[in-house]
Image 1 (cartoon, rainbow, N blue to C red):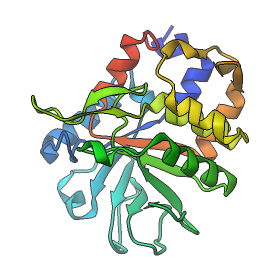
Image 2 (tube, rainbow, N blue to C red):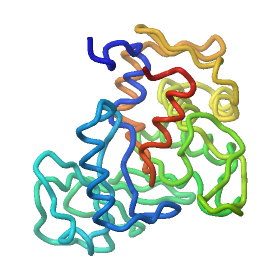
Image 3 (cartoon, rainbow, N blue to C red):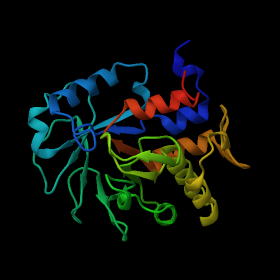
Length: 258
């Protein structure tokens, strides 16, 4: 039996194609050849089912030696012109429409005619948004049926105090957890109230999240696996991380992955 088959159905639904690998960006800031090599190695690993797209800037696409089977999300400032079929989506800060599905980074107003991109962290404590801000975003985006991806700061499954870079003297802050954010998002999609969404985002106890084949449960709130599948497909798409190994290792440390 493959390892993925031993993982409860609700956890598979929550984690499948969840992480966009952004190793080119801080705090990892790896050289492009290493990023490309790592993405290919992750694609061949037993954890490939958790991997989603490779995040690249449009200006570096030609250097990446794009291979068959890759899936790419491209950071753009304007329409980039002809592209290989591996490029599936764009990401931008520009409030304009492009030729592919586009995630628009938002601070307050949600985009129209595009997906949203929520910044959930950064390299300094002040870059980490309050849980109230994230909860408000999730509730408004769910009500408007606007899909989103998250970016920055979601290296760890649970809300916890962590260093913000890999430097020995890195500043620390309480960061958001990706289990928190995507469970809260699925609950918001299903109409949960603001207090519930906020409480999920604030959760720090891994034991509060229970996964079975049929449902994810959090403190008496159950999300059937079929609802998780829909919420991930229609709403909470993925998150960008400069590390793929760190989130996966943390999941193993919690006993959630074999």
